[in-house]
Image 1 (cartoon, one colour):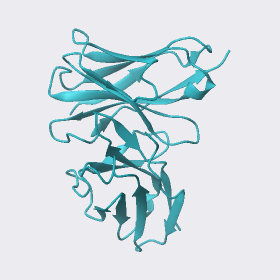
Image 2 (cartoon, helix red, strand yellow):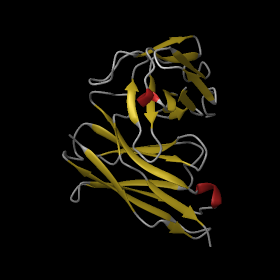
Image 3 (cartoon, rainbow over the protein chains, first blue to last red):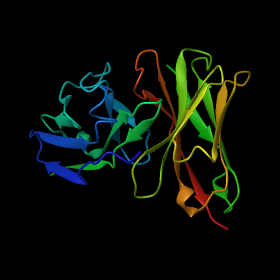
Length: 110
Length: 120
C-alpha cells in the first residue's frame, strides 16, 4: 500500500478558504467512502476532523468540510483561523482491514 | 471519555525488538473498539501499523506484518506492540489510537505519542 498523495503545503490569509487534496487509487480512496482527515499540531495527539468522507464529529467546527471525487478526496477549511495552522493527514480504508495515510499537508495561516 | 497513554523504552538497539504498551483509561478495552498503532518517522507522514480487537483478532500493515505483533491484556486494560529486527528506519513517534462503534473506519481517540529511537 502506497501512501496517499497530499500537497506538501497550502497557505491562506485569515478568513480565506483553503483546500487540501488527497489522491489515492481505486483500491483505497476511490473504492470506499471511508476517508478520514486528521489535524495534527506537533507534539500533540492527532485529532479526527472528518470521517466517512464528509461527516464531522461532534465539536468540530462546520468550517471544516470533506468531499470526494473519484480517487481524490478533499478537505476544505473555510474562514481560515490562526488556530487552524497545523499538519493535516488524510486516511483511507484500503480493503482487507488495512488503512493507509496520506503524506501530510502543512497549513500555514499568513 | 476514553484516554490512551503510550509507554516503553525510548531507545532500542538495531536488530533488537521495540516493545510499547498503550494503557486504556476511561473505558474498557473489551468494548466494541479496535485498538491501533500508528507511527510517524521524523519529518515524515503517519503510517498505520496494525490493530487488535479484545478477542485477540488482529490486522496488520502488509509492509510490516512479518515483524509486528500486537497483543491485548484485558486484565490490565492495555494493549501492546512488538516490532522485531528494528533498524534506524523504525525511529519514529509511535501513537496508539482507537476506532470503533461510532467511527467504524476512523481513529477518534489518540494517545500523545512516544518517541522511539533506534540507535546503538
